[in-house]
Structure formats: structure tokens, C-alpha cells
Amino acid sequence: AQSVTQPDIHITVSEGASLELRCNYSYGATPYLFWYVQSPGQGLQLLLKYFSGDTLVQGIKGFEAEFKRSQSSFNLRKPSVHWSDAAEYFCAVGVSRGSTLGRLYFGRGTQLTVWP
Amino acid sequence: KAGVTQTPRYLIKTRGQQVTLSCSPISGHRSVSWYQQTPGQGLQFLFEYFSETQRNKGNFPGRFSGRQFSNSRSEMNVSTLELGDSALYLCASRLGASGDNEQFFGPGTRLTVL
Picture 1 (cartoon, chains in turn brown, purple):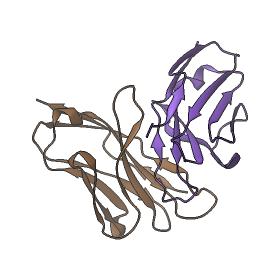
Picture 2: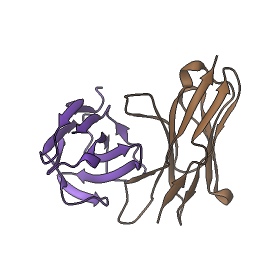
Picture 3: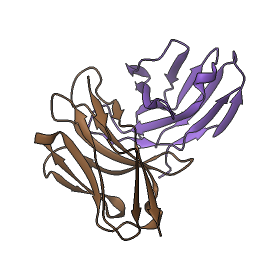
Picture 4: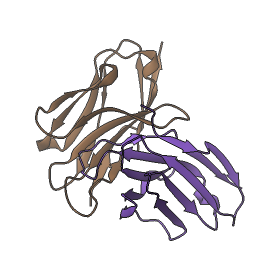
């Protein structure tokens, strides 16, 4: 069965520092990969997605992520974090075929705290 | 273009009651999915509707049901509410049925069961 692991429940960084949030997935074929961000009391906003092609994808708000097939990973990065980036981040996997096509499998999320 | 809207935003019910939540997708989107978010279980898929037909269903009891109307608006219903049904219910819409269509989420309905 498909699964997504975000090993870090909570990360704290200083404003201006670099950030990397980890995501590993389990799926037999090439997945569709997503990173979403959720602010308190809000829905999910899509940061970026990977479907195929270039394994380094750029998203909104200065975020990027790299798909590494050999490591089954899709880590999210940002070179310089802003205080407004404090939120919860979710990695998600969508399957490319089969009966669960269209369903998203989410990781448990990583809560990001930014120190001024 | 307006985003996904969900009504109501907040709801308080008591055990044993039933509740109906509504979701209006982005104009032109034909697929609507529902997710439950709780601190203990995280984000879990409930079901997906496309062109008024349920395409996928998650591992939830039959108390959870949904439907989609011809204008793509969707409702989900929870009968005989339990305390554990307290959660943020998120609706997401996407253009088509393909897995590479990105999903756009609404702000959610916060359901509290007392």
C-alpha cells in the first residue's frame, strides 16, 4: 500500500536560515508528488508538484523540491526562511494508475517554527 | 476565479445527531474529494466524486456518505455522530479524473461533536 513518511514532526529554524523538510514515500511506480502548506485554521495550499520530467521543481514562495527515485524521496527546500513561512507542511503522493487514482496519501506533517 | 468554498465553516453537534457539509468546487472542476483531518490520524481520504459518481472510497464506516450534484457541488453526510468524528473536514476539487490533476482545497469545516 502507498504510504508517506515525514520523519520530522517539528522543526525550528531562525529567520534567514536555510530549510529542508524530508519526505519519503512507498509506491511501486512513479508517483505524483505534492507539497502542501497549512496555516492555522486554514485549508491546504499547494506549494509545488512533480509529475514527470525535471526532478528539481520550483514552487511558490521560493520553495523547491527534488525528486530522487533511488531514495524514494521528495524533500522540500528553501534557501532563506521568512517568519511568514511558519506553518505546517504536508507531503502527499498521488498514484498514477489503479483503483485509487486521484486519491492523495498524506504524510503526518512537519510543523515549522521560525525564530526572529 | 473563485476558490473552493465550504459551508458551514464551523459546526457544533451532539452525539447521535447527523450533519451535512457542503462543498462548491472551482468553476469547471468536475471532481470533488473529501478528507478528514484530526490530530491523531492526520489527513485521511473519505471519498471522491466525479460526474456525480463515487469513484473512490476510503476506509470509513457507512455512517459517512456523500453525493455530488449535476453542477459538481458536493455534500457529505455523517449520521449518528460520535465524539471521534470531531475533525476538520476538507473538500478538494480538481479539473478531471486523471491523477496528475492537482487538487485545490477549501478552508474546511470544523466539526465539534459534544
